[in-house]
Length: 190
Image (tube, rainbow, N blue to C red; front, side, top):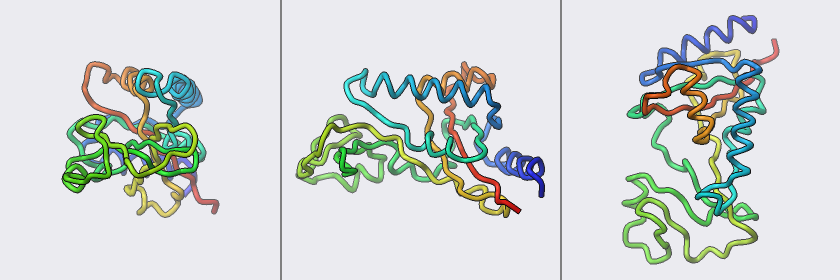
């Protein structure tokens, strides 16, 4: 397959996924706008600027040859069980806190080595932080392109609020409560 055929196969596959409302391959302009918005979001920090954060999933997606965004119905579970959507790391890479989904909340119930900073976010009391802590939006798996032989190195990331608003507006979903996601991949050299 040539590049256009690969991109067409990716588009067809992604648009067939339940919960995907819209999909768009990134143009240079859309790519630049998202990079600018993600850079600004990181500059502003998390928690109203109280703590720095990095969006590893987005930056890793931008390291791939091709990227696209999807708008997903807010009730969709196509991204799996939503473990590790956001966590707090220290400068040495230790996880010192994390957001908990319902399953993880049950696992943590009754532990005395954690401190709740909200009903669904904890800090590990026994972990000694090295350097300044920061929020991390990690890379996420996006397994739906595996059957396309010419596609490799697929990764994805959650998009910050500012970029999410911008993308939904660009794709005609600004009034909807849906969410967006960025996916990047390489095309195998033939």
